[in-house]
Image (cartoon, rainbow, N blue to C red):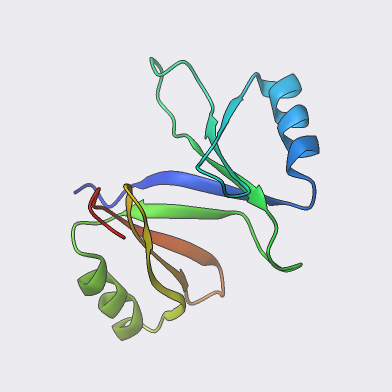
Length: 122
């Protein structure tokens, strides 16, 4: 795995309004993920460099924009985060048909995600 940022998430009080804004300004496209208040964000044409992400209904007033880092072994990397002084703030959870996700705080209190591709996660 590359240990690269592969996904971003934007929380919004009003996802429809946010999608209208980003669509109008940047031409981004959106597709709802399942029945959740979560939309996949397509930021480009797939031919140029960059990443896609997600937009969701904000769960907490302090919820920040986050970037997720793809890793080979999410359990091993979560342990590495803790051993280096980071803090797991949302434990390992499944994203059905996609993979595993953990959120952590770095030493400055910034929140990031760890993502492991695993289509059989549930």
